Length: 270
Image (cartoon, rainbow, N blue to C red; front, side, top):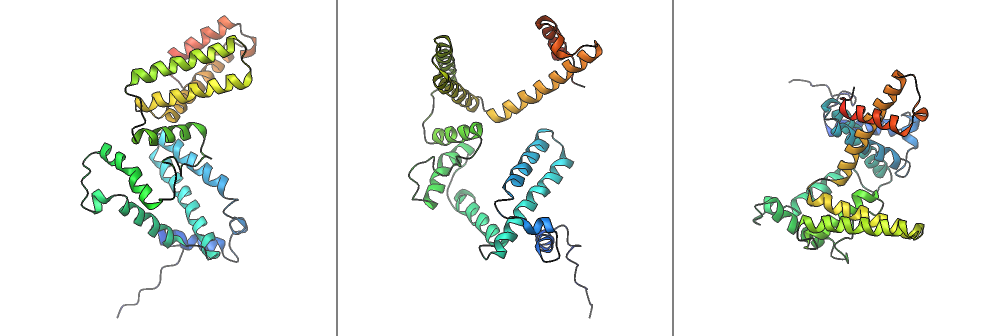
């Protein structure tokens, strides 16, 4: 006979069960006071922050950072599951069983005999898979969280509508719509249509640009993040150039600012 001593909870570090053991210890009497105080509501902001940190790691293509941030995100799921288990609502097994079941149901072309040979054919049927599970939904747009930031929400509702055939015929039509919305915005500004009208037309411009992004197979959120990073990098270079010349940005003329901006565009970021 061979006696194998049990693994200490903190020694099991490479399994989901090990993560749940550590989470239970943190939440138990004698555990961490901060973790013990948390609720589903109090953790919302931390969940959102962790998601954005994962996205940042993806943007930076940093595998080490991505591994760490995915772990932080996974802990958020674990602690929510533990809180729910303590309240006899559900546990981690219910979460895992639910998502595995959903994936199997929604992929009959993988786990059944339905023939969907292309990604596009899957997208066309995807909403019908979901609708069959929730027949009480009165719109194909139901279920998209309205609390999402406006840009990804716009992308999501447009994409779902497009999957059902509510779509432009070609990208040139989308470009014409962008120009049309810009003209309407300019008209409101020129004729002083009022802040409410300007806000309405500005929203239409953004909505049309989201549609253009879809047609160009470019996520508008990703495009704007890239533009933001580019601006920050160039602005910091302008600040550095100002310091080299012994000036502050606020002291420069428009021509001097433009000169430094052009230098920042031409020179690689440090």
